[in-house]
Amino acid sequence: MSKLSIISELWQFIKVRKKWWLAPIIVFLLLLGGLIILTQGSALAPFIYAIF
Image 1 (tube, one colour):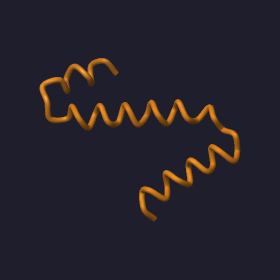
Image 2: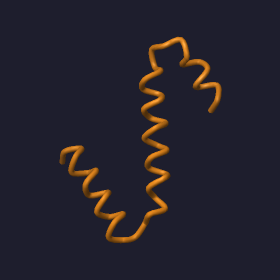
Image 3: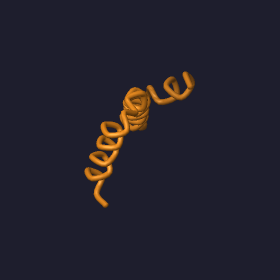
């Protein structure tokens, strides 16, 4: 299974089942994951981890 098919399946699930409350949770988790990945090797990493 490719990553793109998982994303499209998740989108279809949200659309068909009317689970719109899941969308903000998924967006927040993606943003948080992106923040952790982008700051992994920088000097900001200790400060980001201290927040959580």
